Length: 384
Image (cartoon, rainbow, N blue to C red; front, side):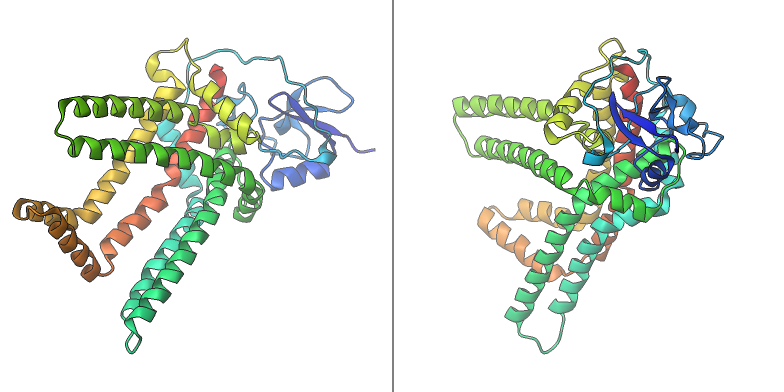
């Protein structure tokens, strides 16, 4: 009888499974070398990398840096896997962060560049198709203007819906591919997509919840800004500023709580509630470390760098319009007339190829943000 093996993920045991099944899990990108493993009839734990015939004999050098961390494999639960609900009492040794996140992020990105580019196409293709097709329809000769506008709007709406549907696959794919490359392994692009699709319902639900809350907080902040701008009373201004401080506090608290939801939802195969709970726990961990070594501050720094880059891209692409806007502000005192002029200018401007190219560049580089959070997540797991 072939040897049967148990694979452990954060204290949960999966199996018993024979070598053929383990190879299928590995091919699908669901088993990492660092997973604790043991034979079903032996209580001696080792790692999945030491299972004969499953991984290469020589483990990659990067495995040494994460060998003592908890497993982060994304083995989905199934009725046939014999999942045990026992939680391991073993706790890793507390130690300061050991990864250079910037270097590791770029190493992973360039190692899997074409696969990350393939994932980026999930968000690039719908947007580019919508922009180019709308431009083609708008300039098509012999077509009624109203019909062209209706067709362009319908096609744009279809592409945006497709883009929203593909976002959860993109997010899960980035997590899976980054975690696999971080352990020195290679995984096929189709295997990444196959594994990512399985997480679509969970990631889609969390995306709706997380981004909708952020949207509400931003609308709340915008409403407060309008209140301040339109108020002449000192009391109203002070009240609005107090509400703005409260809104910033709410935004910060929610940002902390959802900092690692993508990693727990995919790499830990956690439910939506568990992902949010564990994300909050990990983000608030590292109290024994210096403030700049804690997951929260390192995550905030990563997000700040990325948002600054996105803002710079937006300013560069929209600079001509912003320049004209400020010129019109200095000349026009009537807000309604100013709005009408800016709307007419946007309608006659047509497709901005420079802005489209910068948008594509941003989306090609966007996997760097996901990779950085995966690297931070793997490094921070040794500190809780």
